[in-house]
Amino acid sequence: MRIIDAETVRARLTELINSCLVIPDRAVTAALDRLSDDAPLSVAAAKLIVENNRIAEKQGAYCCQDTGQALVSIKLGDAVCCEGLYGAIDSAVRDAYTCARKSVADPLTRINTGDNTPAVIETTLCAGDTLEISFLAKGAGSENMAKLYMLTPADGRDGIVRAAVEAVRVGGANACPPLVVGIGIGGLTETACILSKKALLRPLGTHNERADAAALETEILEKVNSLGIGVAGFGGKTTALAVNVELAPTHIGMLPVAVNLQCHSLRHGTVKF
Image (cartoon, rainbow, N blue to C red; front, side):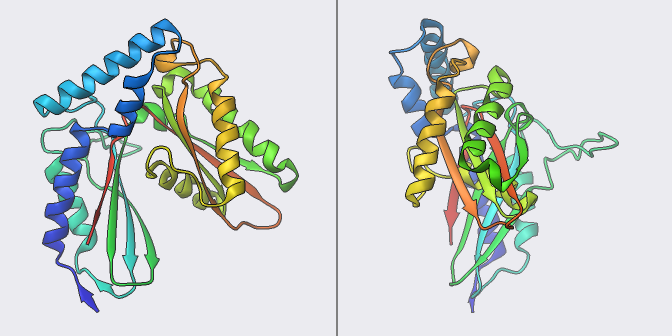
């Protein structure tokens, strides 16, 4: 059994979160910087986003005023022991968000927790002696546009495509495009939603290892970009930069599809132990 010190986890995760809140995914910034053959207002908006990101990194300022709710995804090896792991994660969030906007509140009383905890923690057990922790800052603007569709098996692949495109159409400029679209397919309702979030953690430009799922990603991306929403809703052909699909086996009588939209301020990262 491998022992991992919880204090080490807290320190490294705090450092990761601090970095992510200041420096969004550099692949997104690079893609926007290359944008030229599009609607003029969309190109201009893309350049402003790039400038904002570079100023944030240079000055050590937050790249977006909505520093989001902390989503922490854990892959925990079955030969690992980390006593106090969840407490260390919340401590890391508390420390990293000291100067950030406090955005977490009780859903009924709306009383703010005051320190952006508790984090939303999703844990997957796997074989081995490693611990991998991924962080995603999820802002409300794009999260509010998430959709869960309980399709029937008869809806099939075409139904999945229609649902994904409709979610982006309805979300529109409210989700702060250009987007990364995470799609979770299968399992139960909660499975599909979790998968849609995990899809957002994938490096930009990667595809699902399954050829049929990768083809689905390509088709949905083409159809989403044909909506003409564009950067910041200014029109054009760059509504999304990527569509990422994750799958899980499901019941023969169901086809759950969760669509999670991520704004251009994609703030995520991973630490491994």
